[in-house]
Image (cartoon, one colour):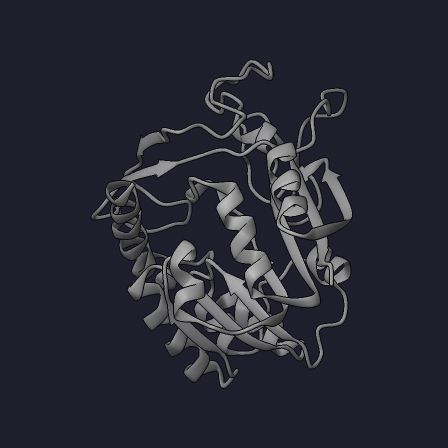
Length: 269
């Protein structure tokens, strides 16, 4: 497991300078007052003013600091030292206060002994985690009684599809459920514009929707809602069509599967 973790950390360290310089992440636009949050997230999570918010797997903190702009007191955790350094720099340059802690997710409760009103996890985070039940336990550990988790992610059904087909057939190619061994990828470029990565290898896991929800329930959280969405924020399949700005969907008549989901859960007690 340490080999998988270290390989992924090197990959994300090498992504940081590419993402910081990319048009997609728009560092300058954020410093000038922008936000990276999706309207769905803002509406579904609700008012965060005065709340203590913890962002797990925060990368270089753009979403984290966007919540701070809405009034939250924010802390971000990430296992990449390059990402944490960039997050602190973004906070300083934008003038938006935020605290950033370098920690691997499963180890983070040993490093940060605190409780929060909100735990937030954004798109593309869960695939880097080998154990979804361990993740749910970390979430519960960080939440105050009555605190909430908000998660918005790509649907595990989407992650399981063959994303190289262009014949408009939805064909399963990869595991839907969590597996002991990960999928190994060698991808020269990241998902933004920019040069090739110094460390292109990654290891990733899928987690079924039932596995995710059950893990949260078993960790002591109560599900408030689970929404499945017909859109996704990137062109996940070659034949997807653009919908609203920043949205892609399956062509009309082919909308047979959810592409994203969002959930909110509260810690009982």
